[in-house]
Image (cartoon, rainbow, N blue to C red; front, side, top):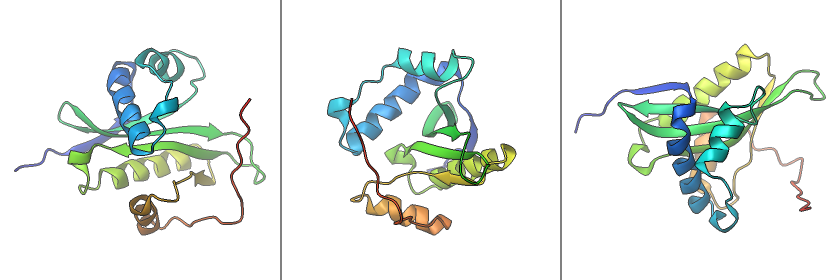
Length: 154
């Protein structure tokens, strides 16, 4: 089977429905679908129709299909007096895994960080996601065990 080339680009409003589908698939994969409250309209409004969007998104495209997505936002103020990027979601469709789609999305995010004078990219990985941990370590990322994540539901 011949594979189409994978192209990375910034998401646009017309991607909203498909992005929502990938976000839903990720919620199923990461086992939080029972609290998943995003709709295609929310993706459109919060990511594309606001002057200062709540998130940014890169997509991996193969032909006319979206093979994967990477959702991120900026942390404008850090102790290093330099912005950082927080990667919220990285998801690649099952049929596109093993084709370096995730790696291409991460490299595009790294370029985005450099272009925006960010000193760091941060994210979390579920402790049971061994494949994800191996992927990030293969890219040269370091696990940070100095901090413990807390949540406070209000």
